[in-house]
Image 1 (cartoon, rainbow, N blue to C red):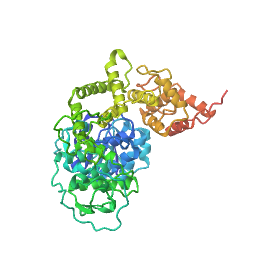
Image 2: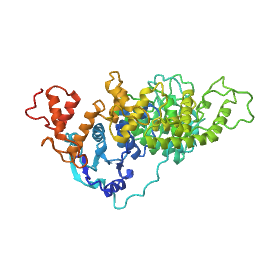
Image 3: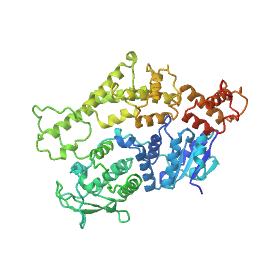
Image 4: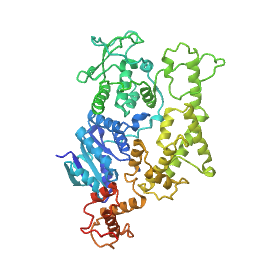
Length: 577
């Protein structure tokens, strides 16, 4: 039986969508993905699939914006769990690159992929499925239907930034880190020692759930290993794929030859919940790079792992309140809102009261009026973004408090005083951190807002959006020859046809809509479009393209787009005058 099914729901029946959502049961191996409305990037669908797999916590940093790593993590979690059937709703709204990535995910994992089209199947999707063995059904296939007794719906998963902090004693030694050194060549790992550092017998179930909801497989496995073994980071970095034995559920950690803390090589027994995370990490490494490092990324960096721990709101025991008020101490300029990891690193020139004083001020900052003000203004920023699709208010009469607050957040980030969790939440709203140095990012934010409203970037040259000349900015991007690859990919994610002239772009989209409603490329020149666009003259526009093709007036992209529709040129093109 083919591994891909195209389910047709041309009437967009609400019962079909409800049945697909009711069939979502990860414990039974059935996953239903409902793409986030208004998103067009392929990475956004990967995040939706990870959320459907109960992995919604994406740590801040460049990893969450990496194209191939997100899809590799998705495939790794599918291979490590019991997911066997994945149903994607609203498949007709996805971009062609997203379809190809979904088909590639099916080839990697062997799942049964069901694409549900609630409208007429796009020609590009039909072409993508032409080279893949698939079946076409009307309505949902049996494996995408709910069981006779569907499982009870789970409560919504809270955001990581809204969770309470959990204190885990075994995280005390995680921040101890040395420069990576060569591994030991010959050793006889001993059983884990309980002398000096007793191993953890049990963990709070809430901590285990938070680690399982991390989308990064390596970070989830590293935190799980730290919580179980209490090993520092420079011991985690020594583990390789050969040190993990899935059948015996054991992991061997080595001691660097000249580590800062005395230790020895030891083999640890892992609980089943931690073995699942290490299985996902092994699949993730096989899908990304040839690196054999199991619990540390190729750059051997401790900071991203600590950020993931903060993102899950897990911290080591904090210092108690100081017994007496310190006298005359100048606090450093940057005081993050996360846990005090440096309190457990040996810094000889640190005053003895530093850790307690810093923690006391941090607690006052979190519980004071500024914390409540931030939550209130963030709600206003989210409401502005929901209405305008960007976060760049320019009207001082209506948005003066919001403009002042946004300027304050830019200043705090520049000084290093803005917490990583808050930076992540503002990035989700399209925050423009530097309006002067990031002029291109500001224009891209308005282009993203335009695409969210209209679905394309065929913007007239004189068009404006909330006072910003978005049409002129888009014209400069079409004429620019020095755009970076990142900028090209960012615009391609919004509209693959953004490099075309706006008039031609809009007419081509009207033609594809006309063909999707049953129109034909051949017929009378004066024929009109369907009822949804009666003023469009497809025959007249095609005749004009025929004249341009005969004189070489088309670009290579325009010719490829027209040829993909079928035979559109007449046998005897009119001669130019």
